[in-house]
Length: 628
Figure (spheres, rainbow, N blue to C red):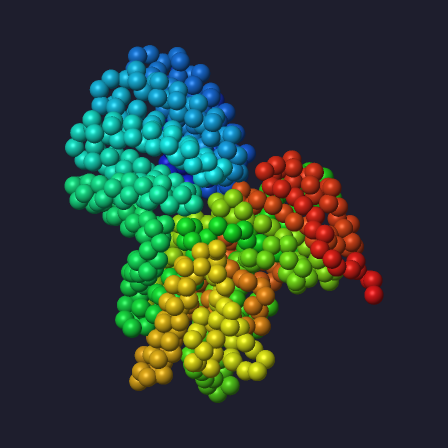
């Protein structure tokens, strides 16, 4: 009976129905009557909690996963022969992974030390195995030891740790060469990838020492060149495709660190243009310029290392963090997911239309009726202005009391912006035949994506005696409009490339709409193509927000769009942000509202639930409410 329940639990696990799988495996645990069954049940219970922790960003679940893996260790000791060695080593791996992933989520570098202890034990067990199995398992252990040092080096900014990471990746390469056939090739590729990334990150962290940085870049290039040769030998088409995609990304980053910004931009634009190619209706000239705009305004991790702020109300802040002032049972409060709200009800009534004006595109009404799009854009908005008085005055107010909200600070550790899944923003556009409504292929509701690209917003202004923005204007002054685009980092050389490329792309778009004769059908298809970029431009009046946004376009009526009866709004879920938050700054007037909120209570509750998040109280100069 236990075996049947375990099998059912595994099927539910593979379907990502973790809660149901746990329930089924708990039943199996009660009927398991031998060590092998206990080992199996404890493993799958641990995996359920582990994968659930990754999916929900709930770090408490890692503790539950570890509990089951530790019990598995005890039961594994009762097995016989080589099974003891295999199960002990395998379990040490998963204990290490729990600490490793938890360290990534909450930014606690000490957990990497604990992860390494388990990966080191796994290495010891692997050495006791025989044949190719021993070689492969030792290689895995060396890989994860290297990953620990690599991620720890990134978190604490200690470049020396990259040397230690390289030692382990080098050992993995040695073991990989002792394997046979395609397995050997693939493991060598992985080892060379990580060796190259170590050199690349070291070069970036040592840019003050030009000679040393150039040496690191040279070594990184050698590793990536070796990967190129090995990839050609791989016989696994799926692995080969993934490896080529990663290799292009790594060569792109190499160009950026070397200062070859033109080459970096060209590669980034080509990558985006390939994604747009799925929508066959987009004109080639139009596609090239749209891809250029996206390449400028989408932000890759290597380009950006500044903190960002999300301003919101205390009520929303507490829901996101899983706490609640004046609530008796804090343990029952679950952290909610950040929402992406509809473009239709933003504070800018002209949202998404500024680019149409710039290009001279009018939206004609027929018989006083407006056609409604099948799709809508949803945003989560952020600002580069952290602890900013104007933002505090505008957003998150309690009862119209200015500066009474919360400023959520992300990316201070540089761990929030991930490798962007650009297609995730526009998946629905690529599934539809140019917005005509005919489905290109059967699609399922998109899952929430925490790898949505981050976009910088550009601001459009028209030149007159009152509006001049020469400092950040990317245009050349010969047009009657300007585009404000602030640098996203201290790298002004990269910013100059972005400015020039955005200017070229916008002039190309203006010329296309001005010079091209289009039928009514072509006009609608080309206008629909602008959906990829029109929400990345706003009116110059909003320039002080210095906005960045996560953007996703979704079909109205899809299963993914949710409805909130409390606010009577449609929204998309972005994800749990607890593990990505570095700090919460409470507004100056946080305690001066009728809500009766207290800074001390907020700190206490958050310390118990999310101890890694720092709390500070803003002291920006603003009058308390009802003071004139």
